[in-house]
Each structure stands twice: as structure tokens, then as C-alpha cells.
Image (cartoon, rainbow, N blue to C red; front, side, top):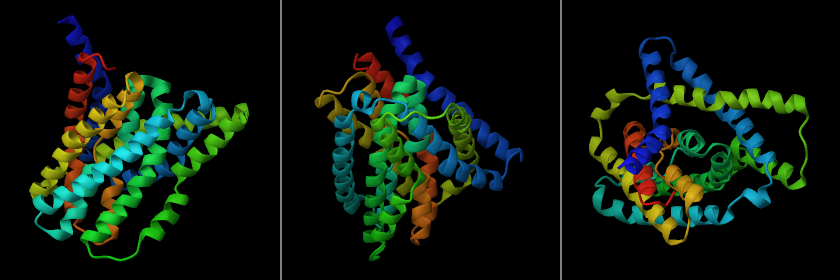
Length: 316
């Protein structure tokens, strides 16, 4: 029994701090301490400055050849593609409106890796989890963007868009920072102390600011519309997709930090970027927003359950 409570404490130590900061963001928004302008500017600051700084510093100061697990990255890419194909098949039978299928599918497979997933991994494994999760996030995010354009274009009967997305990926600050960091790491280039310390200040802003903005942007009133489609996408995102990836990871021999990062990243909620993409392509943005709200709240519970189960089974 003591082992069970230790596993329970471990799982809640991962999701508990995330819940507290998300709830604080929601409370500050309702109390008018922060507003939509703060959320918009804060989100841009995280995406363009602080998160790239965090990723660059964590990777560039590490020996990638010794610490990186490219087999985990390869598994994540293949598993994500297979999950996407399964979801495309299921959507044909369970989502009546053709134009909503892409929204449901994207919400089901596209995790919020850069904010919530990364925060989960840092809480669970510290710097080791950050390095492993950063490389996983960089490669899988590229695949997320490509698959999102494909599924939304198919359901909305749109042509093109993929080339623009590929250009956007090439100009993505997160991708640029990861690639640059891998070059610095491979060449063992030192950073001046001034730049290193300044970068650390920005990096330390990332997770608390990002989570505050995420919590402040949650709108529970929007759940009244398209609840059925949002619930289906949420169940797939928080139960079906993590189950498939975790089971596959166990079968392929991943254990400890590797399996933990895989579980935490796959059980993270739907990415906020999914709403932006749906809205830009003229899809059902209300449905996309509902999926983000439900998966963000539900992930705090299901992620704790996944980690508790894996810890209890001795796989972590």
C-alpha cells in the first residue's frame, strides 16, 4: 500500500503544479487582473522568445550524441502517423458532418507539446526530461503541422496550403532554435557567460507565463456548442491515443524516462495552435475551442492516471 501512495504522489507532483498555475490564470482573467491583450502578447512572447531560448539552452549545452534518444523520436513519428490514419478511419463512421471531421481528428492527435507536455516532463524528470522532450517535440511538431493541413483540407474540400505550411515550419522559431542548438551541441561551441545568463532569465519565464496565458484563455461558456464532437475528440486524445502510444512504447522496450516522456507528451491536451489553424482555414473554430478546453481540464486527471498506472506496474 505505501508503494501505491508513493506512485500516487509522484503522478500528482507532475500534474498538480500545472493545475495550480492554469487555475491561477483563469482566476486572474476573471478578476480582470490580466486581460485578452496580456494573453495575446504573453503568448507571442513565449512562442517567439522565451520558449526558443529555453529549448536552445537545454539542447546546446548537452552532448546530443550521448543523451539524445533518436529511437524514441523515430517511434513517435511512426506512431503519430499510424494514429492519424486510425483516426481518419474512425471519423468516417462517428463524425456525421464531413466539414467537422478534420477538426475532430486534429484535436485528437495534436498534443500541446511545447507548453503543457514540456511542463509535464520538466516536473517529472527535470533537465533530463527537458532534453528528451525537446527533441521529441521538435520533430513530432513538424509532422503535426503537415497532418493537420492534410486532414483539414480534406474535410473542408480545400486544395493547396501544404507549401505555405512547410514554409511556416521552416520559419518557426521553435524549429530554428532546436536546429541551431543541435549545431552548437555537435560542434561543442561554448556560449559567452553574458549570453548564457541572459538566456536563462528568458528561459525561466517560459512555463509559468505560458501556463498563465493558457489558463486565462480557457472559455467554458463555449462548451454549449458542438459538445458531442468535442467529447469524441477528447476521449480519443486523452484515452485512445495515449493507450496506443504507451502500449507500443512498452512493446518496443521503452522504460523509465523514455516511456515517461512518451506517456506525458501523448497525454497532453490538444494544442492551442489547432484553433488558430482551424479558424484560418474557415473551419468550425467553436468546435476546436471546445476540444482545447475539455482536453486541457481532462488531461490533468488522465495524465495522473496514466503515470500512476505505469509507476504501479514498475515501468517508470
